[in-house]
Length: 118
Ligand SMILES: [Zn+2]
Image (cartoon, rainbow, N blue to C red):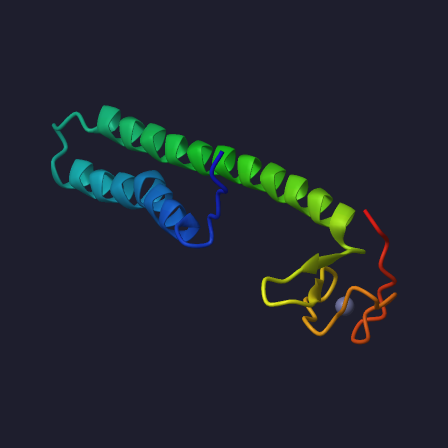
């Protein structure tokens, strides 16, 4: 499953939901005030239902994203005290990203993490 990251579009969902929940109903209410005979109540309700659906969609996406983040954090925690081999030789500390670690180092010189063998 693709990793969801709502940082790029979460605010757009919120703006769109606000538009359908408050902006459009406010404009329709003004229209109803200007045209007393027009039956606009159903359109206001429809706009609020669409806005609620958009908010519900965002909530579901956020729940999925938080679950994915939790799973990634657990996977990282398992390998945090290890060193990953680099293509050009040497290793990288998985706790801090220090790339000046060798296979023989027992601990990272930068963050002090003691390496475990996996
Ligand atoms: Zn380190």
